[in-house]
Image 1 (spheres, rainbow, N blue to C red):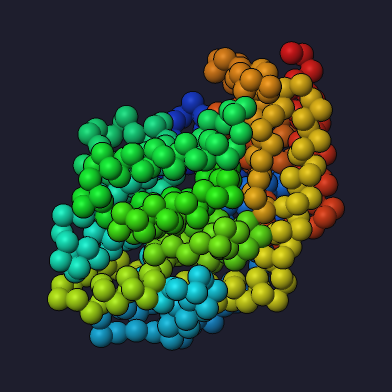
Image 2 (cartoon, one colour):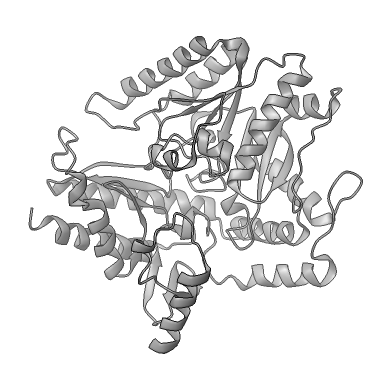
Length: 447
């Protein structure tokens, strides 16, 4: 593609496509992606980048997998889509539902297919409220979420999201969705376990303040992703499970990012030996090749919703999409054939160990991670967690330095986040680490 073609496409892009999180000041010279292969993605100018965030945490099996294109073509040639409302079904969706249940926590029984993580969380919020109505307790409607959590961008999920940057532009908040606090959302020198216990106490206080008889569910990410990659203390989710049981509140776990191997387990709560009542998944179920997600329910939740007197009046046109399900099945076969969950654990250990070496730099701290999702902060003083002034834009500078060297990732304020495709090799992780080390040195050398 020559420069004139590129300029014409960018002009059409600016005139006709409103991008997610869009402001024109930050979209004057977009990278125009043309193709991908494995962990690499190529711009129209031929420049090769390492995809350090698996696109948006989702391209688990890497780019350019012809097997997934073939699965889509084969299914489309037979039955691309069919109505899946009551009375109708299709084979790929049935098979994918069974496969997901086989991989999920032991107490899970059924899935409700969606098109995205936002829809999965939205479905679970509605299902949690409906569950209590079916139980004869319609007053239990409130949903408790956590500060700095991210659960999506529908109206209700914007309210559930604890990252305040998403909220002010859209008017009054949705009632009965309450943000509590979260483990290590603001790391301190006070110790991770104490910090986690403090946040559990905050959730308890929120439930008691709102009234346990009014609370339907607590929703939480096992590892906060968009909020900064903060793994919880080891006892956080066992304690949260106990709190939910004590107050008769459902535990909904948002595994949209962490699900399907990202943390080195099929699902992240396996690290903590905890089972939720409901799960939200999306992203890696198809590795982003087609939009798909699901709400997953325990046997108790499923049977209460389906066997009670009411009807769950909730639907998406594309729920149980035949082509999406066929791609999802082939995608999960790749996971198993190539042992990607095990690879994520090994490469995650390698990545975290390499990032920990960065703390030799006096401005790098809070190196953290679980499996193949890691982060660190660029700080004025890591000993006290003193941040640079926001006007210094240190995170953005580091992001740009890495991109110039051929690594694409993401920042949250001055936190740098990495979550490469699960197919990454040892050599490719070393390539990532070299770029990050060189970029950190560049950005901090003049301080």
